Length: 273
Image (tube, rainbow, N blue to C red):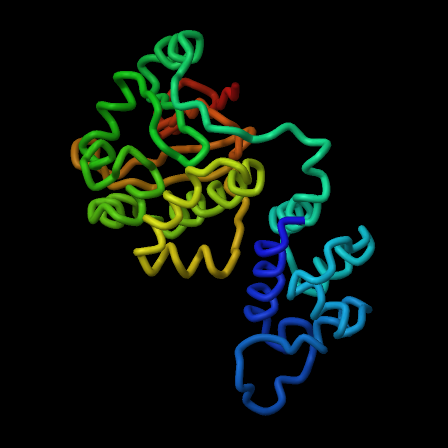
């Protein structure tokens, strides 16, 4: 178990629930937000002392039944349940899992050929931490006017979303793009806990209150099927359909299908290596 993140997840999600969310009377005003530890423990059918040990990292081996009960008590969605399970496996399974190691920053000739072959459809390669590793000419032509290649973005999609002033102006559903970036980083951080790059990326992004809040709350969303609504400087209002097979892959080839209603291509595809 990744003790600190598992414990943080439990505490953060408990703080976000209100009594009425779980069928309890609201009662008097509370000193701290969210449910009390005793309330979550009762909902999950465990003792408050045991839940305290989990939240403090003093118990590192909860059973599958306990994890399922806690997931229900905390009203986790399917993506959050999956993430919760990965956190619980964490270090307990480290000996039987391959080391994550350093992320690959070099795009292979084969992957470069894939995105080049997708012309004129915009295609790019994202690294573990959403750094832009490569793109075909169509992607650069589409993304450059949005400021994705500006110095403020530091070559990283997440940093672009939270740090570049053009992002909130261009992404009409900016909150969805922000949730997508945070969820992807959370998934990668869980899958690749030994990669030292994560701390640098998260430290940079934590300077921005919107990222810091989302990261602290451990909120996760299902963005495997997502539509980004973009006000493009040159093309006007467009919709970009996004699907992903594995948001925590070491390298992901992403195809942005722009305004599918006006395109012949039947859908958007992603290829992972």
